[in-house]
Figure 1 (cartoon, rainbow, N blue to C red):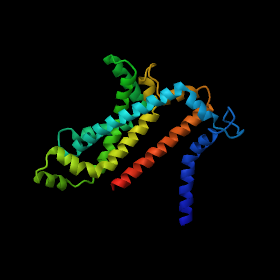
Figure 2 (cartoon, rainbow, N blue to C red):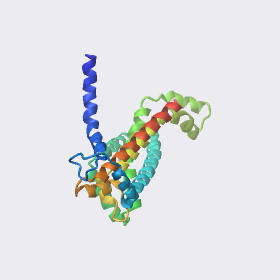
Figure 3 (cartoon, rainbow, N blue to C red):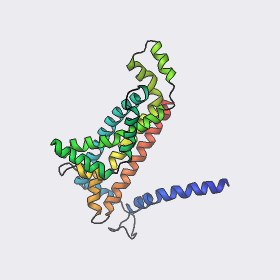
Length: 254
C-alpha cells in the first residue's frame, strides 16, 4: 500500500514537472527547431546573453517584481495585522473584497486598470506597471499573512500592553516574529506572480517599457525558438535558488 502511495505521488510530480524538464532538455538542443534532437550545445545560452533586448526586458521584469513584491508585502502585512487586531464597521465586507480580487479574472483586472490609468491621465510605462503589479499582488499577501494570524493568541498582545509595550513595539517584537515565515512566503508569492504575469502587464505596460513575459509572448507567436527555451530554463533555475534561499533563511531563523 505504501508503494502505491509513493507511485501515485511520483506520477503527480512527473505530470507537473515533465513539461519543464522537456523545455530545459531542448534548451541544449543543437537544432534550431525544437521538434527533433540533433546534439548537445550551449550556443542558445550564449545567444541569450548576446540578445540585449531580452536582457533589458529581463532586468525590467526583475526590477518591477522586486519593487512590487516589497511594497505589496509591506502594505499587505500591515493590512492583515489591522484586519486581525482591530474591530471596525465593514470589516467582514473588506475581507470578502480581498478574496474577490484574487478570484477576479486577470483580463478584467487588466482592462479595469487600463481604464483607470486613462481616466487619471497616467502614461503607460514603468509607473502604471508598478501600480498594477502592487494591486494584484497585495491581496495574496493579505491572505497569506491572515492565515498565519488566524491561530495567533490575542492574550499575548494583551500581555504586551500590560507590560507597557507601545503599538509599534507590540507589532515588532510580539506579532512580527511568529508571522515572519508567512511574510516571506507572501513576498516570494508576489515576486513570482509579478515575474510571470502576462495578461495584466499586456494592458498596462505601454510600448516604452517592456518586460520579459510580454516579450516572450510576442516572440512565441512566431514559433518557439531555442533562445526562449534557454531563457525559461534560467528563470526556472532562478526560482529554485530563491525557494532554496528562503528555506535556508527560515531554517536559520527557527
